[in-house]
Image (tube, rainbow, N blue to C red; front, side, top):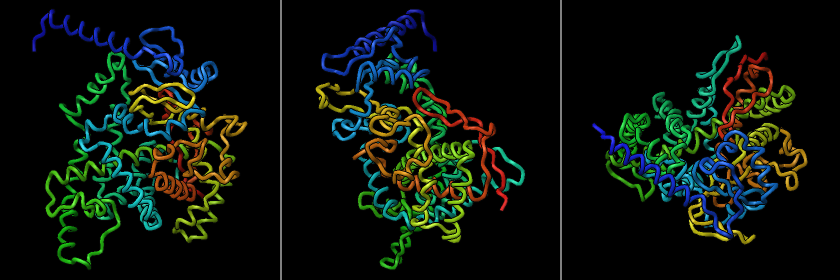
Length: 497
């Protein structure tokens, strides 16, 4: 394709005009809005402080301008809510986590069925199909985790350095068992598709939103362009799942027709899906397969990636703190003897010290909530400040979960047994613990996720001595306010029994 100088010049002027209009529009703050923190650079605003000095930057903003305040980052004004305001935002219908997810995590560009109605159906399925059957799933989760641990880590007679990717594969197998059943979840191609789906999609989200300075939609368009028009690395995962899912679904429909009332439905999410009157079918068409596969991959995005990250981070905290090793190991040995190697929900609930470690890890994971809230209609806070329609509101977890007045004096310390000493469970949402959201925005999958983390940690601690390469706590790597896993890996060595 040939471009003339006039065409290139016109295109440059369009981009410049788009940037100027977007900057003027988004940098304006009305009278009753939260105060705008002053910035030196009119184009980049607070972006550099947000990326490279976020902890001190947000703390100073809160001290000088109160709660909430506005900052200008990547071409848009964002309201930051702290301990006083965040709870009001979570409890109010004017704010939507899905609206924010759609803008910041453009999964709808890949999965067409990713919409509010589908997300509500996913949440309902988690509550009714998974949480209600958690005790029944426990044995299967253990079996798949043990298989995964043996396959991904195996014998460590000699110390073995394990990369972080291995833990995503470990978590993927029990999740696959719950989603697609015991037949398909043993297929390694399906497990790999589940483990790699979010990783492949996450790779495009790692691209810095530089184009958002022109307009947020330009950035979204650019990073998803390859997924829609080029070689789509994500599409292959859908094809893999469809290939293995179709014969299983066809067999189940046939068995239901032949056996009628004698049909014994398997316990998994695909069975819930085909039994839902809204998705009822007599023929497994390609369109139906696409619909159920997209539904399942929404589960995958919401479960495997976050659960494996939280578990791996907990492993790093445990491995880098020798003072915890004997205490938590002894708890696992005692519980293992009680259950004779087969955990029940009751035994998992007795892992008080391990649960406390998980909770403290999650509490210190990020500076900001992973998912912001989007103001869907203009809203006036109880303090009289107005949040305009379309504004993103970020909750400052550091201020909420480590607040010295409301929570504890040692707010900046890692206190692994704080939860155990104060009867605070990792799944329990309370005023100063919002890693799983709050109110109607609370994550319904947190019960399964924390159980899976505790079961996996239990089995790993029983079988291996786990250390960091440095022998110390590995420093977290931050992408702006969000914590990434350390890159050092973890060293596993068979535990002497």
